[in-house]
Image (tube, rainbow, N blue to C red; front, side, top):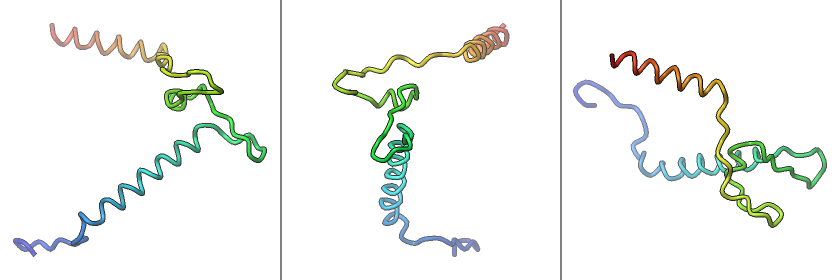
Length: 95
């Protein structure tokens, strides 16, 4: 208790953090690897989705062909419009 406030929680939090962070990191890595390409429906076959930007950025070699560096991400029309609108609003607010 400190100044009338009771804190409820783990008293050994620093000793719990490495386990928690390792679990979260391993979960992220396994989910990323599973999302790299959907199973084709046949046993022992795996398809790598080259259209996924995250997957494409992680590929270095594919069937002996150098895939790195990945091509820059494509910017859609909507993103360009939003960027232009944001730039125009900054200019008008500066005036």
